[in-house]
Length: 252
Image 1 (spheres, rainbow, N blue to C red):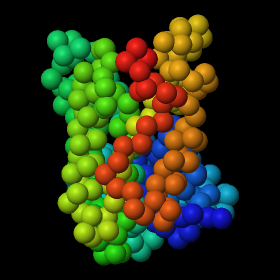
Image 2: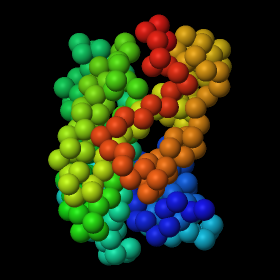
Image 3: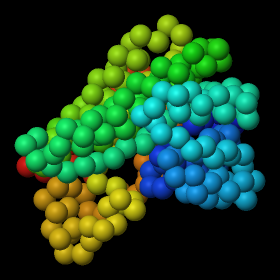
């Protein structure tokens, strides 16, 4: 059964990792997918893969921190597919550093890409969702938005903002049947974490994640498909943690 038949979805950060896995999962579930990201060659590769498999996809290059770019992304979606049912604000960066160690420019870049982008995406997508009689804004925050770890000050602050912004959007637009939820993954096996391997990673995970094994991007994508489906029509303003049990205890 295809849970997202004929739904029109934009997924940012769609060129790799969770974004790419979600684009493919949405297409398999019957959605028409806009694969959006800042590197056109990467998003085009995912869009081509969807089309080769018989799905419908459009690749769009976008800087999610810029309002004009976000508006162009949505306009391209409307021109190509005729509407919009869902926006997944997934694009992000994850700089390391304590407050005294990161520059003002690094702080500003993290806030722009990780938090401002969610504001811009929702701001310009919601009017289109309202025209369709409702829809979904889905965001990615990560568990550090719930409780930070050391050496990730900017990222933790931005993602905490994403979680509360999700709640605010859910409250403000519930009367229009526009839902808003946030997914909070833990340590996911993606190209961004591929460089952290071997014994060091195993030792890290042993003290970080109670369940053995690595979270796969496809598992996060499966959760996104459910939240985008009509089966989740009464779920809004919620944070969904997929972290192998990491948030269950203070020592993890």
